[in-house]
Amino acid sequence: MSKIKIAIIGVGNCTSSLIQGIHYYLNKGPEDSIGLMHWEIGGYRPWDIEAVAAFDIDKRKVGKDINTAIFAEPNCTTVFCPDLPKSGVIVRMGRILDGFSDHMKEYDDKRTFALADEPEPTKEGVVQALKETGVEILMNFLPVGSEDAVRFYAECALEAGVAFINNMPVFIASDPEWARRFEEKNIPIIGDDIKAQLGATITHRTLTDLFKKRGVKLERTYQLNTGGNTDFLNMLNRSRLASKKKSKTEAVQSVAANRLDDENIHIGPSDYVPWQNDNKICFLRMEGKLFGGVPMNIELRLSVEDSPNSAGVAIDSIRCAKLALNRGEGGILHGPSAYFCKHPPQQYADDEAYNMTETFIKSSERICQKLSDLKLGGNGQKPAVMIEVEQSTSSSKTLE
Picture 1 (cartoon, one colour):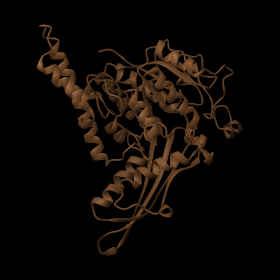
Picture 2: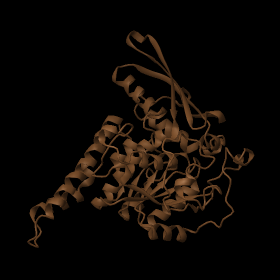
Picture 3: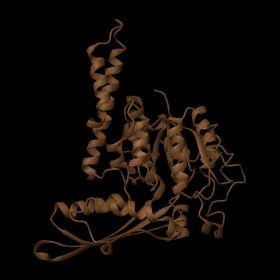
Picture 4: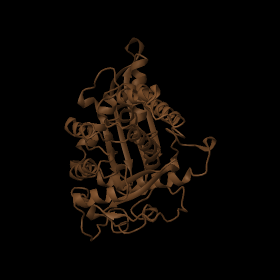
């Protein structure tokens, strides 16, 4: 099976975990697939993903092989696959725009970004690079608050005709105008703001849904998060957090029996603790009333390595985007967006989003099988099965 060719914007901790994971699962079998939601999606396994282009703004990464750059400071995530071969893919200088917050200049270089003294690319330059390297999917891992930079790269994806996976809380897929543009060009998009594999938001959503299903009235809740990576350092600038707080808060509100008043729900990053590195700690409290109006509360502490938690979802979103490309399907992928992201265009309960995504995957597998069966023919005529495949492809949105 051919490789899924991706380009990555931002060679940070999330990219490090993703690239390491691609190599970690190489030569392993399904029985060794610890940490994967899907071993195989539409015939594609983890190592069928290949990064063929990457963009960053840090001088310790620009000009380096991506398999070396992922271990450069300020990256601080767990190294679980250290011996990577050279890839031959050199990290290119990216556009800075609002991707670098001024307050980060006040911190030691080992903790913050060190801007490269290189010419920034034009949109035309980025588009050309995407086309020349045969990129099929563009992965956005820019810092929270990079509103202009994310839109710059979304424009590049549209012009280059490549699928866009928006892992950050800048609203592209969930913005009707941007969604329309991807739909019109028949380019797949998944977004916005990636959920962790088992993180604070998915845990909070699951418990909120449990309150609803068990008849417990949720009255107030908070989710406080601390961490020591560049993501948490960047988010010390509270002016960059508007979309992040909205994304995380709406993810929980959308599954509650009744929306909570703003004063009764607080969700968001709380502080930067350097020695935590990529370890994220969530402090969660939920207060409610159960049978007889008797009060109850839950307090939970969750500790996870932030970036592998993200990569476990990204590795599936990439393969789902590739299935859409194979099917000729563009626009929002509603099932994958709802299952993989905190702020999709339309929120669904996680069980429903899971079923939608499984239907999306299985429908692609059926189409691929039918196309494979066609190759066994040879009378030069379009058989009935081809008509069925075309109908399945054209109605793919209903399959989600």
